[in-house]
Amino acid sequence: MRLVVWQNPANKESEVIAVKNHDLTDRKLAYRRFTKTDIEAFTWDGVGLRPTWKTRTMTGYIPDYSVGDFDNDGQDELIAALILKGGEGGVFTEPKSTMIAYELSSHRNDESSSGGQVSNDD
Image (cartoon, rainbow, N blue to C red):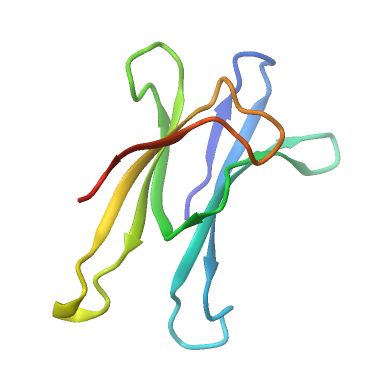
């Protein structure tokens, strides 16, 4: 998974944004199945990267994400594809995905970051 570096216009600090997909098997088996995910941001404090904010934990996994002006309001949003249910069950499982977006300019230093689901169903 790639990392995204975004400069916060409010304080001019750069933030490293990373997705944390949680593995059901905890890497003990040959395959991996992700069941929950969250997105975290870190800033450099002179010694290392310290966490500054994170989203709430969501069911599913995020295969990719980006930062951009998703709703054309002049403010950056964090946009991510969220896979709620994959097609690993064969013909009996219907895959389901959604897109989520978080307002980056109004995030707080706790898990109650503003933002939410933009659309669902794929």
